[in-house]
Length: 370
Ligand code: SF4
Image (tube, rainbow, N blue to C red; front, side, top):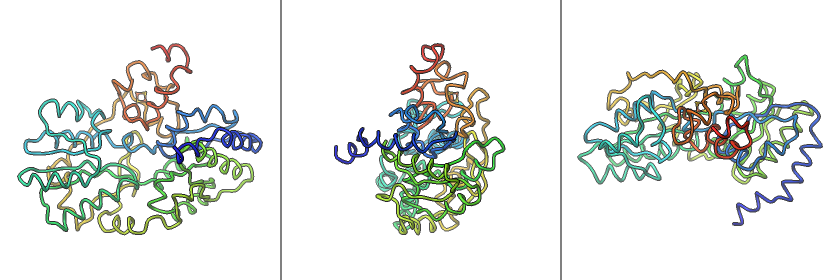
């Protein structure tokens, strides 16, 4: 497995770890923004190999986790309607809404289908002209271009029985919101490599300068993450706060210009609610006026659905790095991947699920054996 093994090489990992240990003189808190990075850090035990002075804070970059409960409820409402074919990536089917989930809707007769690309949903719409086909378009800047392309193609081809339930979110406004929080402890960021592969890196130097935090664009394999941490620690120790790109094999400064042009055409920036965090101004996308006819919220009149979050679940604090998953009283007890109370336990990229899968047995006995 050439391209996996070479970024997991234990000898190179040890060299990077030695450099991180040698460079670290003070306590630092570093946030990895992306859920994929969280998963990799916990799975490979990277945080346990770092100097005690370095704390990794797990950020809000899991798309399933930050999709608001009320958007899940809107999906459930639409999916249960007669004549609708509701298409989604598989990871959304088990995300709990306020009463049930898409699996339950499917078991009760709803036509809920797992697809591997939003363009598959468009094909389903073509093949079923007498049905309404909806794709659940969630996620960060990474998944948005393919969703934008689907709506663009639907309009171009005149496919009118297709629509998109949109809940796209943007990373840079979330970083700003985290830094503006009075309880913020973050001193440096590993920026999400795949987001930057689409959007480029232009948005990050102003954030690094404004909040005086180093930002290192980082990939997802163990060596990528160690290199991102190494560069962040060196900047912190030297009192610098700059953008660095530690993922040049995938990220160019201008990102993917064709994808960005598609995004500009199909979406407008809007205020967006993040599950557990609340509304962050100008932190998401909605369909632009030209494509508003393809907005499933409007087509199915579900804009008035509003839902309160569970009072037990502390995923908002987890997503902001204020607590670790096992510090939630429900972790491993009422809340497990089989019976998730919050979205951070549902997705394999969620911090709670990652701790449950890879770290539970290292935790105190009352948590590990609950
Ligand atoms: S363990 Fe479960 S209830 Fe607690 S914060 Fe995580 S998802 Fe929410």
